[in-house]
Image (cartoon, rainbow, N blue to C red; front, side):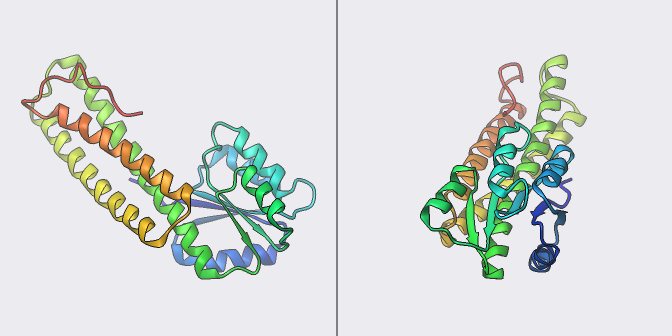
Length: 226
């Protein structure tokens, strides 16, 4: 079962972290503080995060350098980063943020509703992806079991297939609703692309699951989604 998503808040000023926590508390997710780039990188060594809110102007390792380290790590390179900055240095400064791997760049003071909505999109995508991984793991177990025993049969296999199909249907429904929301809201291109990738993975998982249904053949030619 998918637990609450973790959101990493990185800012060297405690009052800014407190403000971010107040804005994002309504999302009912786990908010993790980091007061420096080094502290953020340490947190990323052990925990998985749905999105990172990263202040640009920090002493020592600034936001750009921190983002560069995050994107170089295989474990963390795909985590969305939203840059927050109190200073607008123009298009070149913004471009540097996107070049460092940010999916968005917001200048302070920002609209709390807008920030919360943007973070919510990436949290939803993260949760759907976690659910998809759970279904893929169940399917992989079923495939391995089928490979050892031949055709998929028996009450235990049928029960697992039914449970997996029901869970997958719920994720498909949620993913469809999220994609429609992204279209309606004219969301960021990165969020739309991530949602499209999620839908393709869901389609592959559904095809693999359908191939396991009785009467459609054995599992020997079916491979689990990546």
